[in-house]
Image 1 (tube, rainbow, N blue to C red):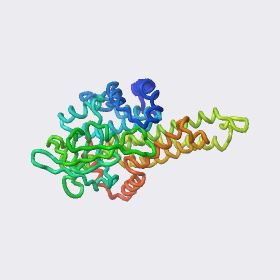
Image 2: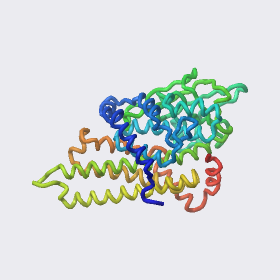
Image 3: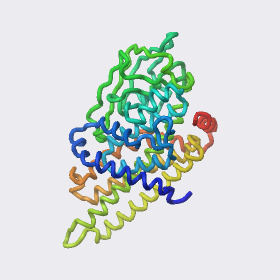
Image 4: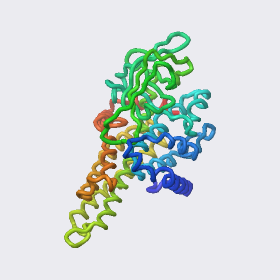
Length: 393
């Protein structure tokens, strides 16, 4: 693949989104961070400006552009150094919405996908539970078929946008083993409750919720896709989430490197710029190589996903594991270059380090990625390739 996949159209989109962020986003970041506030109005502004749906079909409020356009949006959000709200925005877009676009009915697309892309409704993905994270098969929330409606009981944990969402793409058990089904769950349903998860290490501007479902009645039309196929839809959708994570991590690492470079040119010690000291120059050289390796790997993963869809899960798993680990290491080294000032909030690098720490955990831990990669290498998951291919729209 080319080392520069971006066309003039992508560059124009980048410039337009950069201007949007400079006006609507960046001036408020410090205020939001200090208040630990997830700004709901940004969902409306993003949707009205057309930045949610760049890679979605035009008939549902998207722009009909390619996946590289979504890469542009993810990269620029990372450079804004507000990891929490950025995560909430792309969790809204790239966790539930691709599934609705792929398997939803026309009615579901017009009632949920379209208003979400336009910023009129906020979406969340309800998979993780107190006792089931990477182990999706361990989900205990149930959906009971009552003939003319479903009844949902259970709870979810660590749900991004959980307390501000208008609807949730919800995974619930409808049988034994991997028999899970997906539902479009309106959060105004009686019996539903969401409480915020507080005291997080980072991602302070992201809304994170714990959800409770107590005999929640939902219509039969709320089921999306085929009954008992939810596990496979989730596994397929994880690939796009992990792909965006690798892009986000790469951009955050590059932004951290640039902060360190700028500081090395400004800061003086022992009568000269600290950028003149070999130990720091070599530290910068090493993280420069790591950023370029992250970019090459994540861009290759995008290219393979465009060509093969979720069946490209090997390179996506490699990218997610490698990039997210390296991104945190790069940001941590950038903080070290800043010395004592790096530990202070005013320089922004402390926030980046805190926020990036989640990247090795969310969307599948590094350990889970390693297990996936090792299983592929000893050829134990041929059936999963077939599943990924059949689920992808």
